[in-house]
Image (cartoon, rainbow, N blue to C red; front, side):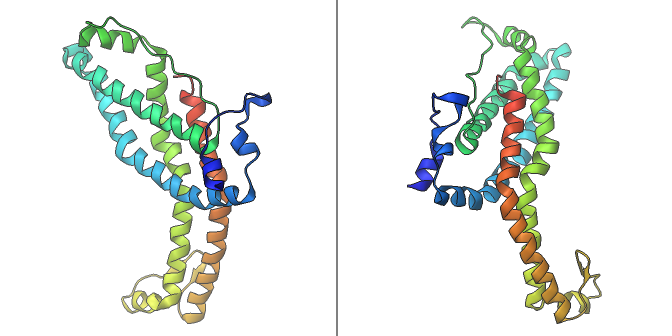
Length: 226
């Protein structure tokens, strides 16, 4: 029930526009959201790598091909994909952060408008450029922020792997074996690495929610009205 409450995106019509689900969420809901945050960040990071990066690159190439005619036919398709992807990311802002997202304003054209006409309308629409700028930020700062908690958890897990005895195989192979500021030369050092990893794990879980909301707020800031 707590998770269902947290997942509601209906906004409270009262003051400050704060979602009721967020304001009245019980402690169990906050704990669940905290534990889910690193995995949600990982999901966003994967979406950035497999969607944002190629979509940004292809759209730039398509715009560059407009003068020779090819881009007149490819740009509307790519910008439609970009808009749909932006809409999905904005839905996560409402669902996971409980933040209100304004209804998007769409570029308008006649139903029988051809691809060249749609391209010209989209190129003249400021929302298209905001979404393109968002993709650029998403593939850099957005990716770093989204992936940070999970990367810290993975690093913490490596500390446990070293403590389980893997450090010996690495040393026997002649590898340079450091875990943060700890040089792993014996089991005691490996145990210290596991202890340091435990601290890293706790920090990662504690900051994951804040980091995730930061990523979602960045999306809302850049394309909230697009």
